[in-house]
Length: 303
Ligand code: GLU
Image (tube, rainbow, N blue to C red; front, side):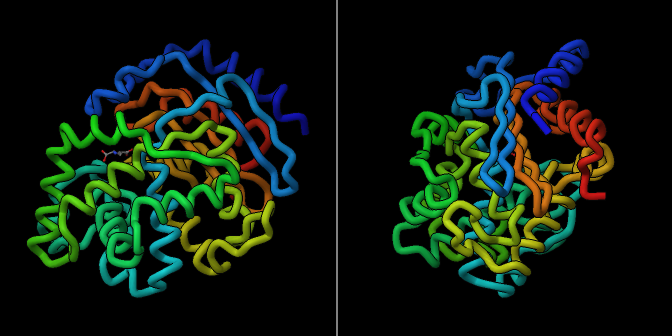
């Protein structure tokens, strides 16, 4: 299958739908991104890859990085991790405080902000140089040098009112062990990582290959943990639209407020799409439509 031709066809058909989304405004630096960007990249396990549009342009991966921080924390801590964060869909917004109070500081899953803050806390406890060591882990998956964006991290820090409330609430329940500023710095940094669609699809390929990076043949995480991370992506990867995404696209994945979406088809490929305008639930408007058409057209969901 020559995916590049199909990508072009699908892009031109979805472009006819008016894009009613909005670029994320609550992090000032993200609001500056050109809303008309669109890129897609697919990498197969045999290293064949296909690209379309702005697939070589860097963008802020934001919450997509939460899958990578979860992978490293789960690799280090094993099943003990689940004593501090759950694996259930939240059904509330990604930064909601409501559930956290009555569930006594244990976040529903590692992909809502509260859960990702707990995972960042775990990494601060376990890594010698958390910021450098986490980036080295990501670079190992990506096979290129990616970096944190100082501007994006500082921009998010300048208005992190809700994340600050979340972490303080969890600290009051004893579910944050380290200094709040240190944990927040790692969290802002990991959200600020910039990648192209091509780098992002390459980075996630180990999750399509039972935890083994096909290029280096290195085991990143064991088979069972890889399966579990995929199932959390399927159930919790798309904010409180995870059901709808699964219904329409049918692949495990994760989105970010930078407009990126990465999906995995186990034993076949990983694929990244980027279009900055977000729908009301915070997922890329055109990215979601594109993936829906893609899996429908070639009957390529996991179901
Ligand atoms: N850094 C963003 C935040 O904490 C990530 C949000 C996202 O991409 O879902 O709000």
